[in-house]
Length: 115
Image (tube, rainbow, N blue to C red; front, side):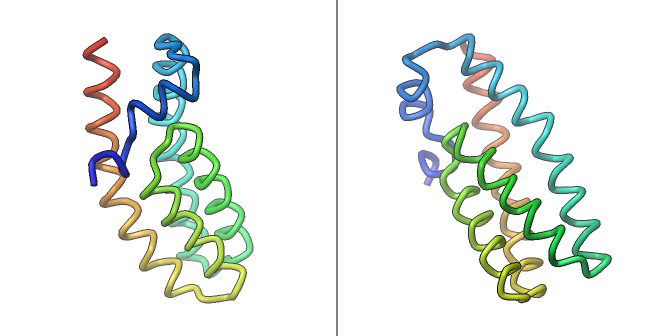
């Protein structure tokens, strides 16, 4: 499961083993992702499924860049549920996303700091 949360080997391989770039991307992810999650939470609270779907799509892309596969799958599920107008499903997946994000964040920080 750890590899699915953040696959360091796949991540580094996708960057031609450029550790400096990897750290920059992790830093950007760790800064931007919580903001997107907060915006998504706000959109869902307001019942704005269109904005929620856009934010889920953005999260999906961000997760793909850092090879956080579990998070990417959950973001994809949120995006599809949003397109289908299933607000409760989006909220449910967001809860799972935020729980997994905490774990992925720890793995990313460990990778970042043990260079």
